[in-house]
Length: 202
Image 1 (cartoon, rainbow, N blue to C red):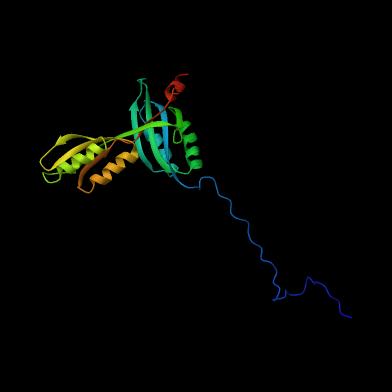
Image 2 (spheres, rainbow, N blue to C red):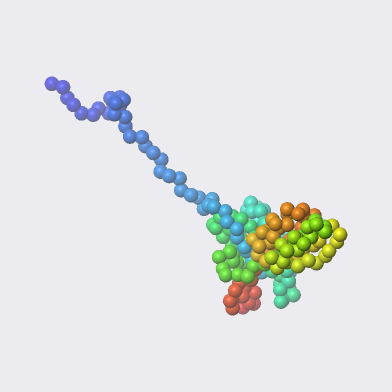
């Protein structure tokens, strides 16, 4: 009489292979998400070396600073930095925390999701002669830009607005030929009564 049943030592039946063991899906590691544009505001003491330390930290975190604007505040000993960079939310949050720990950094705020007023200024030297100058002026007027210099074969347009607005104007003027371009970088200020600088004073 034959005995049925599974025998641990019996080779697997090729007609009925054992179910394959699939590895669980890999968990996403912090700092490996989709990169977004972020705007950071840092209030720092106006001392030599602060800018270098901020830039070195961002370089060490493998961030490419897209724009960096540094300016005075109402307090002579305090300066304000506005940085725009790209990275996922976790990586930027960690970088902001490390930035706050630097010597002479008083306050750091990621204002990406806040309601802000955002502007930059650009000077654009465009090829323009008698044939196309009128068209260039029309485009500049559409974007509320103004002409600040006029020569026989070129003109300089001064534009202010958000990064996207300045990008759009430059894209249109590029068809005429851009001889020279300089941009200040983004500066922002949160709307409403809140103030990052007053928060430092308290």
